[in-house]
Image 1 (cartoon, rainbow, N blue to C red):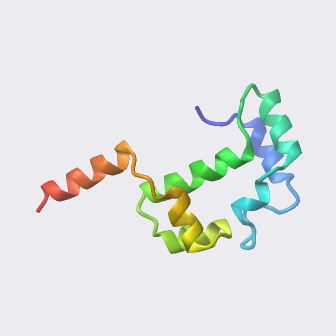
Image 2: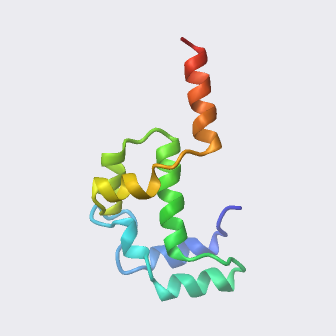
Amino acid sequence: QPLPTSMDKILKALPVPLHDSNCYVSNLYGTETLKREFRNCGYDIRPHELRHSFATNLIQRGVDFRTIAKLMGDTLKTVLNTYSHVNDKMLDKAYKMIAKF
């Protein structure tokens, strides 16, 4: 389910604005304020889980691994080793592409 609108204010109050071109997703990792606010909203989620969701969603949308590595402040090797798993959505997309041949 989507995050409540109350989280928008909390995310914008982080030390590094999310729209900042130097803001990597890793800057959110371990943010105690964010973890506490998620709990207050009834979510059992940690910022690191958002990092995984971010990478997986980009991969599913076809963003290349080098770009994802740059956005996340990681090396290409780390991103490939961590996020290159295949899921049902990716398989479905591949099947549809193959069927067009």
